[in-house]
Image (cartoon, rainbow, N blue to C red; front, side, top):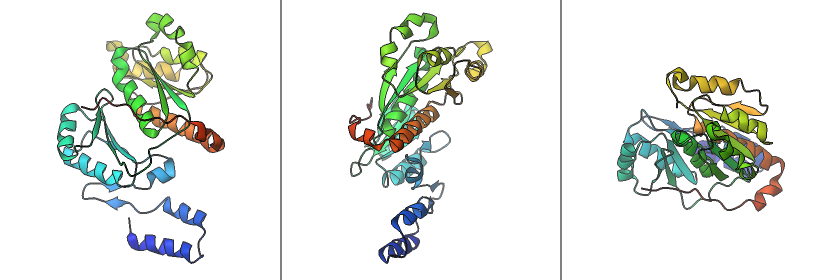
Length: 272
């Protein structure tokens, strides 16, 4: 951040020349922090509700660790996605306090000095099969790190439809549903026909040859006749969770009293 511009902004507020609400608007587009290899957007959480997230592939362990450290200075949590175990081991050598969610392939660094994120509401994450779990758990962990309560419902695909139907009471607890499925992607349509909340469908690259790396499931979900379904890209559990969190934030903004009764949730981890 540019310290001089920040001083000028704060001085204007102190002198009464700028309203607090106006200053807040200016801070939403404040300057980035420039590293040699990245420009960090420290005010993204102020604008969107959650800080910038690191895409792991293509970055060195040193770059990932450096970005996480800087982001965690300004946020209660900094996270990186698609981190494989070998990469995490090298990141942990530099950041012993980093936490790893192996199935979700997420690395997170927490700032204990700042209040953890909280969102009123529950995100239900529904997985068709065990092979879909890496994407499903990416969605679940991301939603938890965003501050939402998360309900996990694994291995309830349409090949054994009774497994889903026997869990209808659990589905009804969720305020938003993320449905993760590969093969023909039919689970999203079935859930969409049963649920009274928004459904975010996530096609996965799981299936046989004609599955075309997830394209078959993607097209099936896009062509669903069940109303109220939105579709994200193939294997994008992270994006689905972020959309679910945004839906909950809108509801919270419209009904702020609900946030006072939200349960105190903390992200569960399988720290190595």
